[in-house]
Length: 327
Ligand code: SF4
Image (tube, rainbow, N blue to C red; front, side):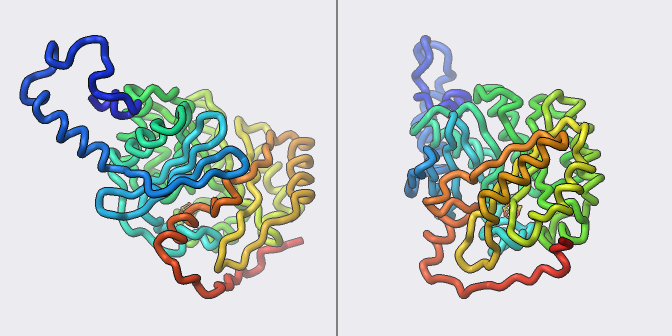
Protein backbone atom coordinates (compact mmCIF):
# COMPACT_ATOMS: atom_id res chain seq x y z
CA UNK A 1 0.00 0.00 0.00
CA UNK A 2 2.73 2.47 1.00
CA UNK A 3 4.72 1.56 -2.10
CA UNK A 4 1.83 2.41 -4.40
CA UNK A 5 1.12 5.62 -2.51
CA UNK A 6 4.75 6.77 -2.64
CA UNK A 7 4.71 6.14 -6.38
CA UNK A 8 1.44 8.09 -6.82
CA UNK A 9 -0.31 5.00 -8.12
CA UNK A 10 -3.88 3.97 -7.23
CA UNK A 11 -4.20 1.10 -4.77
CA UNK A 12 -5.75 -1.14 -7.45
CA UNK A 13 -2.86 -0.52 -9.88
CA UNK A 14 -1.42 -4.04 -9.42
CA UNK A 15 -2.18 -7.02 -11.68
CA UNK A 16 -4.01 -8.93 -8.96
CA UNK A 17 -7.45 -7.92 -7.71
CA UNK A 18 -7.31 -6.44 -4.19
CA UNK A 19 -9.97 -8.84 -2.93
CA UNK A 20 -7.74 -11.77 -3.91
CA UNK A 21 -4.96 -11.00 -1.46
CA UNK A 22 -5.89 -8.15 0.89
CA UNK A 23 -7.35 -9.02 4.32
CA UNK A 24 -11.01 -8.02 4.48
CA UNK A 25 -10.64 -5.48 7.35
CA UNK A 26 -7.88 -3.70 5.43
CA UNK A 27 -9.95 -3.76 2.26
CA UNK A 28 -12.79 -2.03 4.09
CA UNK A 29 -10.50 0.53 5.64
CA UNK A 30 -8.76 1.26 2.33
CA UNK A 31 -10.88 4.22 1.15
CA UNK A 32 -10.47 6.00 4.50
CA UNK A 33 -6.72 5.23 4.60
CA UNK A 34 -6.27 6.47 1.04
CA UNK A 35 -8.05 9.68 1.92
CA UNK A 36 -5.91 10.10 5.02
CA UNK A 37 -2.70 9.68 3.01
CA UNK A 38 -3.91 12.16 0.39
CA UNK A 39 -4.64 14.65 3.19
CA UNK A 40 -1.05 14.59 4.45
CA UNK A 41 0.07 17.04 1.74
CA UNK A 42 -2.23 18.95 -0.60
CA UNK A 43 -1.28 21.31 -3.38
CA UNK A 44 -1.91 24.92 -2.34
CA UNK A 45 -0.41 26.59 -5.42
CA UNK A 46 2.25 26.00 -8.08
CA UNK A 47 4.65 28.49 -9.63
CA UNK A 48 6.60 27.66 -12.78
CA UNK A 49 10.09 29.14 -13.06
CA UNK A 50 11.73 30.13 -16.34
CA UNK A 51 14.47 27.58 -15.64
CA UNK A 52 12.03 24.66 -15.84
CA UNK A 53 11.54 24.28 -12.09
CA UNK A 54 8.10 24.15 -10.56
CA UNK A 55 7.75 25.50 -7.07
CA UNK A 56 4.94 24.02 -5.00
CA UNK A 57 3.31 25.52 -1.94
CA UNK A 58 1.95 22.53 -0.02
CA UNK A 59 -0.68 22.55 2.73
CA UNK A 60 -0.36 20.02 5.55
CA UNK A 61 -3.30 18.49 7.43
CA UNK A 62 -3.20 21.21 10.11
CA UNK A 63 -3.10 24.05 7.60
CA UNK A 64 0.66 24.70 7.86
CA UNK A 65 2.31 25.61 4.59
CA UNK A 66 5.61 24.18 3.36
CA UNK A 67 7.47 24.23 0.05
CA UNK A 68 8.68 21.58 -2.37
CA UNK A 69 10.41 22.34 -5.66
CA UNK A 70 10.32 20.15 -8.75
CA UNK A 71 13.70 20.57 -10.38
CA UNK A 72 14.83 19.93 -13.91
CA UNK A 73 15.87 16.38 -14.71
CA UNK A 74 13.26 14.73 -12.47
CA UNK A 75 14.53 16.07 -9.15
CA UNK A 76 12.46 17.16 -6.18
CA UNK A 77 13.56 19.28 -3.24
CA UNK A 78 11.50 18.52 -0.12
CA UNK A 79 11.03 20.22 3.25
CA UNK A 80 11.67 18.37 6.49
CA UNK A 81 10.37 20.89 9.03
CA UNK A 82 7.96 23.80 9.19
CA UNK A 83 10.47 26.57 9.79
CA UNK A 84 14.00 25.90 11.02
CA UNK A 85 15.92 26.41 14.25
CA UNK A 86 19.39 26.89 12.73
CA UNK A 87 18.67 30.55 12.03
CA UNK A 88 21.05 31.11 9.11
CA UNK A 89 21.16 34.89 8.84
CA UNK A 90 20.74 34.90 5.05
CA UNK A 91 17.73 32.55 4.93
CA UNK A 92 14.06 33.52 5.10
CA UNK A 93 13.08 30.23 6.76
CA UNK A 94 15.72 30.75 9.42
CA UNK A 95 14.19 34.07 10.48
CA UNK A 96 10.96 32.57 11.80
CA UNK A 97 12.44 29.76 13.92
CA UNK A 98 11.05 26.23 14.11
CA UNK A 99 7.27 25.83 14.13
CA UNK A 100 7.05 22.05 14.03
CA UNK A 101 8.60 18.83 12.75
CA UNK A 102 7.27 17.01 9.71
CA UNK A 103 6.40 13.34 10.12
CA UNK A 104 8.03 10.79 7.83
CA UNK A 105 4.62 10.47 6.17
CA UNK A 106 4.51 14.19 5.44
CA UNK A 107 7.97 14.02 3.88
CA UNK A 108 7.08 11.08 1.62
CA UNK A 109 3.71 12.73 0.87
CA UNK A 110 5.58 15.58 -0.85
CA UNK A 111 7.07 13.01 -3.23
CA UNK A 112 3.69 11.33 -3.80
CA UNK A 113 2.11 14.73 -4.51
CA UNK A 114 4.91 15.85 -6.84
CA UNK A 115 4.67 12.58 -8.77
CA UNK A 116 1.09 13.44 -9.71
CA UNK A 117 2.63 16.36 -11.65
CA UNK A 118 5.97 15.06 -12.99
CA UNK A 119 8.22 12.01 -12.67
CA UNK A 120 10.55 12.13 -9.63
CA UNK A 121 13.81 10.12 -9.71
CA UNK A 122 15.89 12.14 -7.30
CA UNK A 123 14.96 13.63 -3.91
CA UNK A 124 17.10 16.24 -2.19
CA UNK A 125 16.39 17.16 1.42
CA UNK A 126 17.23 20.82 0.99
CA UNK A 127 13.89 22.57 1.44
CA UNK A 128 12.67 24.20 4.62
CA UNK A 129 14.25 22.79 7.75
CA UNK A 130 17.45 21.08 8.91
CA UNK A 131 17.08 17.32 8.32
CA UNK A 132 19.47 16.54 11.20
CA UNK A 133 17.01 18.17 13.62
CA UNK A 134 14.29 15.75 12.54
CA UNK A 135 16.58 12.81 12.01
CA UNK A 136 14.37 9.82 12.85
CA UNK A 137 11.54 10.97 10.57
CA UNK A 138 13.92 11.84 7.74
CA UNK A 139 15.71 8.48 7.96
CA UNK A 140 12.35 6.68 7.94
CA UNK A 141 11.30 8.62 4.83
CA UNK A 142 14.65 7.87 3.16
CA UNK A 143 14.23 4.17 3.90
CA UNK A 144 10.78 4.04 2.30
CA UNK A 145 11.82 6.13 -0.71
CA UNK A 146 14.96 4.06 -1.26
CA UNK A 147 13.05 0.76 -1.13
CA UNK A 148 9.38 0.79 -2.17
CA UNK A 149 9.60 4.40 -3.38
CA UNK A 150 11.89 3.41 -6.22
CA UNK A 151 14.54 6.14 -5.78
CA UNK A 152 18.18 5.07 -6.21
CA UNK A 153 20.08 5.44 -2.96
CA UNK A 154 22.61 7.92 -4.28
CA UNK A 155 19.71 9.93 -5.71
CA UNK A 156 18.54 10.63 -2.18
CA UNK A 157 20.57 13.59 -0.94
CA UNK A 158 20.66 14.31 2.80
CA UNK A 159 21.67 17.93 3.29
CA UNK A 160 22.90 19.21 6.63
CA UNK A 161 24.90 21.93 8.33
CA UNK A 162 26.75 19.08 10.11
CA UNK A 163 25.73 17.00 13.11
CA UNK A 164 27.47 14.24 15.08
CA UNK A 165 24.34 12.06 15.10
CA UNK A 166 24.15 12.20 11.31
CA UNK A 167 27.77 11.16 10.88
CA UNK A 168 27.21 8.29 13.30
CA UNK A 169 23.85 7.04 12.01
CA UNK A 170 23.96 7.52 8.25
CA UNK A 171 26.60 4.83 7.64
CA UNK A 172 24.46 2.34 9.61
CA UNK A 173 21.35 2.74 7.46
CA UNK A 174 20.06 0.12 5.06
CA UNK A 175 19.49 2.94 2.55
CA UNK A 176 22.56 5.17 2.59
CA UNK A 177 21.81 8.51 0.97
CA UNK A 178 24.35 10.82 -0.62
CA UNK A 179 25.45 13.64 1.66
CA UNK A 180 25.53 17.39 1.10
CA UNK A 181 27.26 19.57 3.70
CA UNK A 182 26.53 23.29 3.99
CA UNK A 183 29.97 24.80 4.36
CA UNK A 184 29.50 28.46 3.25
CA UNK A 185 32.91 29.55 4.57
CA UNK A 186 36.26 28.08 5.53
CA UNK A 187 36.47 30.27 8.67
CA UNK A 188 35.03 28.84 11.89
CA UNK A 189 34.26 32.26 13.39
CA UNK A 190 32.41 33.44 10.31
CA UNK A 191 30.49 30.19 10.08
CA UNK A 192 29.31 30.69 13.67
CA UNK A 193 27.96 34.10 12.67
CA UNK A 194 26.30 32.96 9.48
CA UNK A 195 24.78 29.80 11.01
CA UNK A 196 24.25 30.93 14.59
CA UNK A 197 22.57 27.83 15.97
CA UNK A 198 24.36 25.15 13.93
CA UNK A 199 26.64 22.76 15.84
CA UNK A 200 30.09 24.34 16.19
CA UNK A 201 32.16 22.38 13.70
CA UNK A 202 35.51 23.55 12.55
CA UNK A 203 35.28 23.44 8.73
CA UNK A 204 38.26 21.05 8.65
CA UNK A 205 36.43 18.63 10.97
CA UNK A 206 33.32 18.84 8.84
CA UNK A 207 35.34 17.90 5.78
CA UNK A 208 37.02 15.06 7.72
CA UNK A 209 33.59 13.59 8.55
CA UNK A 210 32.40 14.14 4.98
CA UNK A 211 35.44 12.43 3.50
CA UNK A 212 34.96 9.40 5.75
CA UNK A 213 31.34 9.03 4.59
CA UNK A 214 32.28 9.53 0.94
CA UNK A 215 34.88 6.76 1.13
CA UNK A 216 32.43 4.46 2.96
CA UNK A 217 29.62 4.91 0.45
CA UNK A 218 31.48 5.54 -2.78
CA UNK A 219 29.58 8.76 -3.50
CA UNK A 220 31.31 12.14 -3.43
CA UNK A 221 30.25 14.70 -0.81
CA UNK A 222 28.58 17.79 -2.15
CA UNK A 223 29.68 20.95 -0.36
CA UNK A 224 27.14 23.76 -0.53
CA UNK A 225 28.37 27.32 -0.61
CA UNK A 226 25.84 30.14 -0.76
CA UNK A 227 27.88 32.87 -2.37
CA UNK A 228 27.29 36.28 -0.77
CA UNK A 229 28.96 39.45 -1.97
CA UNK A 230 31.59 40.80 0.39
CA UNK A 231 30.99 37.97 2.87
CA UNK A 232 32.41 34.73 1.45
CA UNK A 233 33.43 35.54 -2.12
CA UNK A 234 37.01 36.63 -1.41
CA UNK A 235 40.31 35.24 -2.68
CA UNK A 236 41.07 34.18 0.88
CA UNK A 237 38.11 31.81 0.76
CA UNK A 238 39.34 30.37 -2.53
CA UNK A 239 42.67 29.58 -0.85
CA UNK A 240 40.80 28.09 2.13
CA UNK A 241 38.63 25.88 -0.08
CA UNK A 242 41.64 24.58 -1.99
CA UNK A 243 43.38 23.79 1.29
CA UNK A 244 40.32 21.92 2.60
CA UNK A 245 39.12 20.10 -0.50
CA UNK A 246 42.10 19.45 -2.76
CA UNK A 247 42.41 15.70 -3.20
CA UNK A 248 39.10 15.01 -1.46
CA UNK A 249 36.23 12.97 -2.92
CA UNK A 250 34.10 16.09 -3.17
CA UNK A 251 32.12 18.40 -5.37
CA UNK A 252 31.85 22.08 -4.52
CA UNK A 253 28.54 23.72 -5.43
CA UNK A 254 28.76 27.50 -5.58
CA UNK A 255 25.24 28.93 -5.43
CA UNK A 256 25.02 32.71 -5.84
CA UNK A 257 22.76 34.12 -3.14
CA UNK A 258 19.13 34.61 -4.04
CA UNK A 259 18.02 37.99 -2.68
CA UNK A 260 15.41 37.91 0.06
CA UNK A 261 13.03 40.78 0.82
CA UNK A 262 13.93 42.22 4.17
CA UNK A 263 17.52 40.91 4.31
CA UNK A 264 20.45 43.06 3.27
CA UNK A 265 22.72 40.42 1.70
CA UNK A 266 23.53 40.60 -2.01
CA UNK A 267 24.64 38.15 -4.65
CA UNK A 268 28.02 38.76 -6.26
CA UNK A 269 28.21 39.44 -10.00
CA UNK A 270 27.97 36.39 -12.22
CA UNK A 271 31.47 37.19 -13.52
CA UNK A 272 32.92 37.01 -10.00
CA UNK A 273 31.10 33.76 -9.26
CA UNK A 274 32.28 32.25 -12.57
CA UNK A 275 35.83 33.42 -11.88
CA UNK A 276 35.81 31.72 -8.46
CA UNK A 277 34.56 28.50 -10.01
CA UNK A 278 37.28 28.69 -12.68
CA UNK A 279 40.04 29.31 -10.13
CA UNK A 280 38.87 26.41 -7.96
CA UNK A 281 38.76 24.10 -10.95
CA UNK A 282 42.21 25.15 -12.04
CA UNK A 283 43.51 24.44 -8.55
CA UNK A 284 42.07 20.93 -8.44
CA UNK A 285 38.67 21.33 -6.76
CA UNK A 286 35.76 19.96 -8.79
CA UNK A 287 33.34 22.89 -8.75
CA UNK A 288 29.91 23.62 -10.18
CA UNK A 289 28.35 27.05 -10.36
CA UNK A 290 24.63 26.64 -9.88
CA UNK A 291 21.60 28.88 -9.92
CA UNK A 292 19.12 28.12 -7.16
CA UNK A 293 15.97 26.86 -8.84
CA UNK A 294 13.09 29.13 -9.76
CA UNK A 295 14.67 32.47 -8.95
CA UNK A 296 11.94 34.35 -10.75
CA UNK A 297 9.22 32.81 -8.57
CA UNK A 298 10.30 33.63 -5.01
CA UNK A 299 12.68 30.73 -5.02
CA UNK A 300 14.72 31.39 -1.88
CA UNK A 301 14.07 28.73 0.73
CA UNK A 302 10.95 29.76 2.66
CA UNK A 303 10.04 32.72 0.49
CA UNK A 304 6.88 31.25 -0.98
CA UNK A 305 5.62 30.34 2.46
CA UNK A 306 6.50 33.77 3.74
CA UNK A 307 4.59 35.36 0.87
CA UNK A 308 1.54 33.22 1.43
CA UNK A 309 1.55 33.34 5.20
CA UNK A 310 2.62 36.95 5.81
CA UNK A 311 1.07 39.38 3.39
CA UNK A 312 2.46 42.37 5.29
CA UNK A 313 5.99 43.13 4.16
CA UNK A 314 8.66 43.01 6.84
CA UNK A 315 10.87 45.97 7.64
CA UNK A 316 14.32 45.84 6.02
CA UNK A 317 16.58 43.90 8.37
CA UNK A 318 20.20 44.89 8.43
CA UNK A 319 22.46 42.09 9.54
CA UNK A 320 25.94 43.03 10.61
CA UNK A 321 28.59 40.42 10.09
CA UNK A 322 31.80 41.42 11.79
CA UNK A 323 35.24 41.02 10.30
CA UNK A 324 34.10 38.91 7.44
CA UNK A 325 35.89 40.24 4.50
CA UNK A 326 39.56 39.58 5.05
CA UNK A 327 40.43 40.77 1.56
S1 SF4 B 1 19.51 27.69 5.21
FE1 SF4 B 1 18.64 25.68 5.76
S2 SF4 B 1 19.59 25.29 7.79
FE2 SF4 B 1 19.81 27.47 7.43
S3 SF4 B 1 18.01 28.41 8.42
FE3 SF4 B 1 17.52 28.07 6.23
S4 SF4 B 1 16.47 26.10 6.22
FE4 SF4 B 1 17.58 26.24 8.17
